[in-house]
Length: 444
Image (cartoon, rainbow, N blue to C red; front, side, top):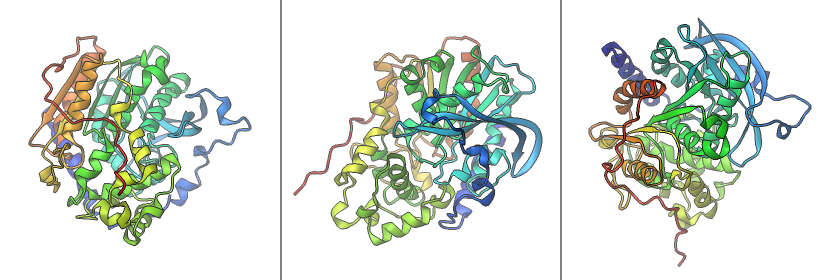
């Protein structure tokens, strides 16, 4: 990878963090008028969604790819397609296909964005269509990750992984929207992709959630897609959300993901957690209900679950509905992928103001727990998913890792598409945490 590309990646990551810190606290408006009024996102056919197979294309449009709200000469094909939400119900979602100017239709990368938001207006398809919101700036920053892929002949498929209700952190839904996006992209004559197109999966942070869940669910949910996959690469992965909540508790920057997780879990699984929240917790909930990661990171320093909850629910495991939901999104209980993987993880979280090291959890990159990621990689090795390449960066934080991971991820994908033997760290990955489901808090 050329040095100038690495420098561009560094600029992109720095810009993303700057956006998160600069955004005013909880500048959480609802979807913009343009986004709310865009009928492309609405399925308005007469047949029920359940009558269509997952991945069926419902609408198609071609538009100019926008950056920072400005049109570019690059064309993008957007598809409304049938998929499945976190509760197993049929739903409609949007993905974007960008054709490389130098490649053919033989290879593509499904890139999962880290747009992490509770607002549908922040999705990558909206940003690509030119509807720019503050949270939607993140998909624009990510263009620096995408340009090298396009330049090397890869077509891109970029799904709105969180669905149209922005179900933040709902890993299984991220996985199904990603897999059905690939089905839609290869089933549409408008994209130039077809059943013979090979795919790699790629994503960082929130995009890593979608990438890993897609790889894990593919053999059972979408075996037709699994046969197309050459591998998956990801960094900064959320594995066991219950551990992450304890890890970021009271941190200076990333504690804002606590209310985002509460809201996302509530929305994804149709549960009402507001009765368990304190007055302060309800205030934060209302501030972030339609917010993005830019509204949360750095705006609630020192926030803890205990401050958010009523005294009798100071232990999150005392809330049965929440406990059941976080156990459902624990990757340690998900199936094992059957294709090669490259997983990167930072462990320098003190650089981003996360100083805790809870017993049985340990440290991480500031928001993601390194011991959880190691445990998952070892679990994959032990259950038949060798080769797995695992790389831990002890001196880098969550914002720093993509600068070194992204160029290596591209090289790793190049080798997979070329049919070269995937490298393996199985047998050499240090021990990690226990990923068994959480147990209810003992009652007095």
